[in-house]
Picture 1 (cartoon, chains in turn red, orange):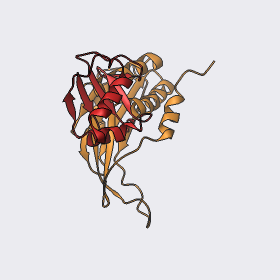
Picture 2 (cartoon, each protein chain N blue to C red):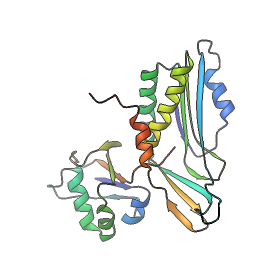
Picture 3 (cartoon, rainbow over the protein chains, first blue to last red):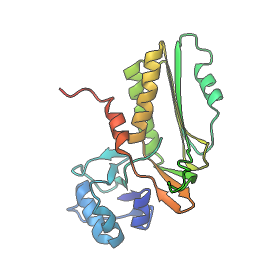
Picture 4 (cartoon, rainbow over the protein chains, first blue to last red):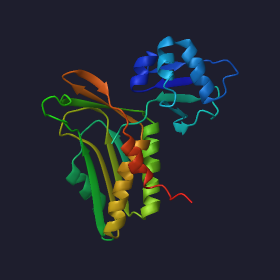
Length: 83
Length: 156
């Protein structure tokens, strides 16, 4: 599974992109966030602002309950501020 | 048409290109967003010396294309254009252009407002400001959500 981080979340995570193999029981966006937070303390701090963080699965916005599967591209980022 | 690019754009050339050879268009509306220096008053926020726009290559283009497709259908547009820049920009430089062409002024003007309101809350871009005090990521504004919400269908 490919994980991407953007904006200040990238700084907190310490990388822009990583390949991960979460355990089989990680099947939703929310479970993936919890698992990633366990992997790196800096990220856990950012994840406490969970209501703030947005997610996308395969380049489409996703809800916490949406499924994630091996091979997916999953991105985490703060609310957008373009325009 | 949508474009995501680092380079600046020429508003006149872009608008001329949008209507070139067309005789069916009655109204063309456009909005350009610029890098603003912000407050200069004493004790206010430090002036912005530069702005860097980050985006999500792939998803950004998909989102912009989806937003444009909605505008075309909703306002019966005859032509439309979204250009959004990424990378580092200085105050006064253009960041974004939305343009909408229709048979009459109302759909062209409304589509323009819809495009920029939806883009601001749905397209994956993030702004980082540079000031004398350092760099900071810009926070999303609740009023942008309010502006986007006015285009949602009324609650029943």
